[in-house]
Image (tube, rainbow, N blue to C red; front, side):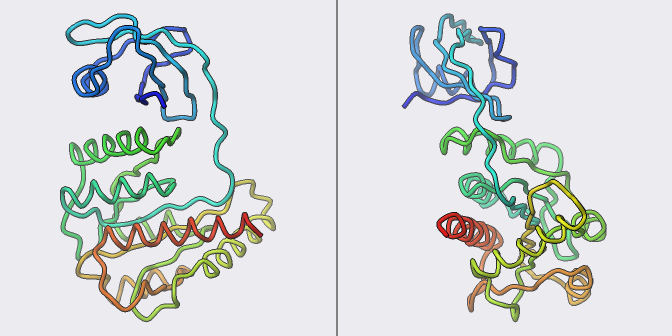
Length: 256
């Protein structure tokens, strides 16, 4: 399989030039040379075969052929609202979320959050999304929303969606619960003649957990509390687990 590289430029003209991190990866890391065949993707579903035709010290030019649009995945979508963990743990969270098909990450600021991932920190996370998408063959990039305060999250992200909150004492977070919750959202959307796919938002608290007030507020918005088992999980582990259960439920529904 040809190596995959992310290109922000429109490659429908037949040629594309690029520099920066992707150039460095192609030429300095994977050691591609003129004449090599690679695979390009632009993060919106468009992919193409390309041949490396010209290399300078800081840029490369490729001839593009066989452009195609990869169909968007159908079915329910999953967003994860989560306080971004520190450093390498944040990179691990992003990598697994991309691999498991999460649509969007909502960086959440709660009363007990520690990390505030704005500016360059968000840019680093976006680079992690690109790297993970290249590795796993994903054609559309997972998005990262701007950092959202808890009060704003309650106002903007809870209506018309299935919201589940990881919290001790909730119902077990299983595939059947996912399917049931999404079916309810789909039924409600149908009555409102909404055309969008049902969406689930999995909400995960910081290392110190949610406050009693935060839990009361989100439950009043119709969210379900769900348990992830008897052990205390790290933030990034909880995110990956909830994404895994969601994927398992979708696979089970497809098999029925």
